[in-house]
Image (cartoon, rainbow, N blue to C red; front, side, top):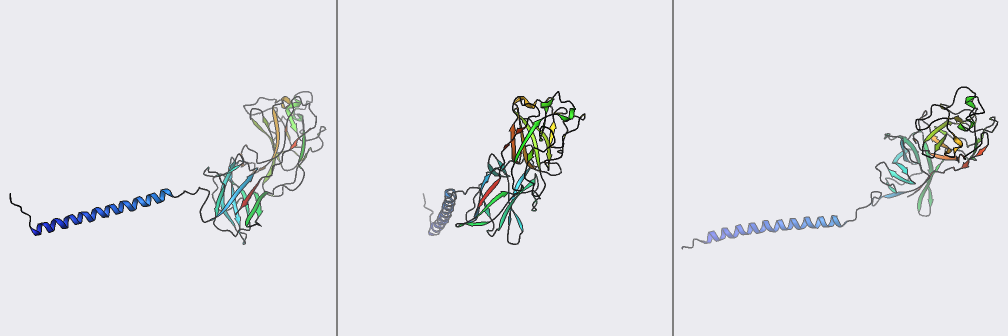
Length: 326
């Protein structure tokens, strides 16, 4: 057998092998670099969604912030020119704040730090514009505490003053004082001539007082909404027309009741709670839904309560606030 190798063939084989070696080494280098990059990325700690490294964080500490069923809250910052800038939309549940994506809101990065104040508004569901509504719920001015900026957002809708109240059971709308007297509740004295509520004046804005009863089974029936403690409230849908109503907030629960309840209601059964709260009012529409926004007074209606007996309510005035630190 004759060996056909020649110097030229050997040289060509050497060059071909060298090219393959170079390609192989380049491939190994690329794979190594890719592995190093992957390991570096995988080993980095992922920052929490509430945190952004390198930016000033706004920390939230809420108290008595109620859930909005028909809207949400919006936090706005105020700078030295008095311009309002949207910072964050959120809601509340069980004492905690949550972004509209459902994630708990503990802190939020600030794009700037020269804020002079902040305020919180109540916004309609679906409202995403950059203009605050008239429902200013909380507000504060920034102050320096040690080495940090602090702002205590406070509820400033109600003027200073006592919160007191009482009620009687009576049904003036049926013009009969001998039957169903425990089926109505009115915020007046036993004679029906004087107001029985003492509530602070509403400072400003579209806000209103609301009275409701809640059964032990969870059914809520609204008594009515009112701005003043004297004069009828805005709703007497469950009352009859035979008699004259007291000129104070209240309701007879005798007719047209919700399907889950049968009238006349016996409010002295020991199964009802009466509550007075402050609510946002948009031409009769409540952005807080069936939930109360700020509770003021409440009373479990005692079992066997005798009609026309004055019953005191308990002051449970909530003080919504959010402490901001940055």
